[in-house]
Image 1: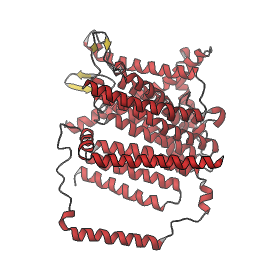
Image 2 (image 1 turned 45 degrees about the vertical axis):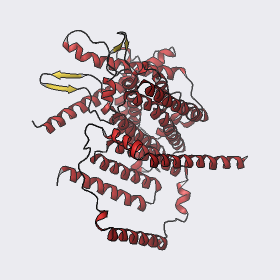
Image 3 (image 1 turned 45 degrees about the horizontal axis):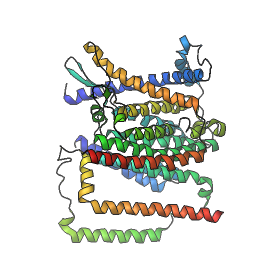
Image 4 (image 1 turned 30 degrees about the vertical axis):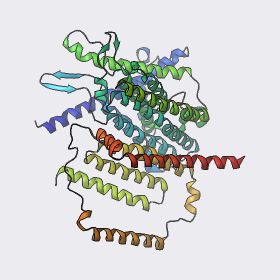
Length: 347
Length: 175
């Protein structure tokens, strides 16, 4: 087999596995969210379909698939169909550059647990996710519904505002690590200080500020509570996806959860050492454990997401904009200056 | 033709066709979408030149920033009202004069410049493989092109301040 065809085969297999796992993960994130929020509010949550409602996501997907697929009469047909796709594809693409495990050896084959390690990996993620805004904005516009339009407008304004502080908070990490490739950023975080503290970026001096700005802006980017104004149900029915039904709605839903997982994965990669963690035991366990650590860190972030949702009330729109522009952007700018000073002082 | 060439011609064709669509569509939202397609295919051409940084920045800045603002404004404008109003794209004479002047200028440069306008042969992308593309661009910007870079940032700053002042004045007159 030539080098090119084996590369093609390997990448295709990786893509299929990653997408399948991702969609499965999305299904069970919805279950986790419903269950955790229910317990936060002293309810049971899904408990009928399967043990502790574990089969509920499957029932939900079947229900979505069987629903009637409606298009509003005055909608701009082409864009109406295109919008969920524009939202979904970038969300799925951005997972491709994230390293989710160490290099493993199967016989003579060496497998890297990452679909591709671009040398501009982090920029690629930003480029791809910035396209996702169009899905929301166009979905709102093409539905020809005032609530949808308002939702679409709100969300595009919100997303470009918070993208600034998101990008700026990542700049500090790049200043410290000196590379744009996510694989290398994770590799640099291996090992420990004094034998105890892991060399994660979060423990490097000014980077906890960038983690704070990153995660807050990330919650806003994914349109989650307390920043979920694009779909504020008590003002806008359901925001930009009011008119969507069946699998088109399903796609928007899928996108939101994939984005949550991606954002958590990036936070893990940039600040919490990616797949690094204690490895021990026989060889097969050493191969599996990095994956396990990576997944547990993501799950921890997801639980935090759900916890915030269950705890905080929604912002008002002017509060949201003021918080983004007058607090987060100046803070992350100051943090970039501070980090540059620290890096220059150390050099 | 090599695979690279086929890819280039595809991207170039998409860029040109969608650029034509931008100026011929009646619906401004559709025009905006085609402009995004053009920007994407140009980013693809950058990738072919192994300018990964430039490609990523092209998408982040133009597609993710500027075009979202365009679309934002278009969506805020009531399109049904606009479609009944007189359009400003029927200015044949001015457009003809402008393009004639441009054609003469280009012709003059090409004829008089002779061989000096030929581009030097491409010596192969990323000759310096020890340095990554983004590193090379950074070094170039902050060493060789420091002054132009700073002037550009100053221009942008002026534009930002101008926009803020324009918006502020309107607010004051409202009260």
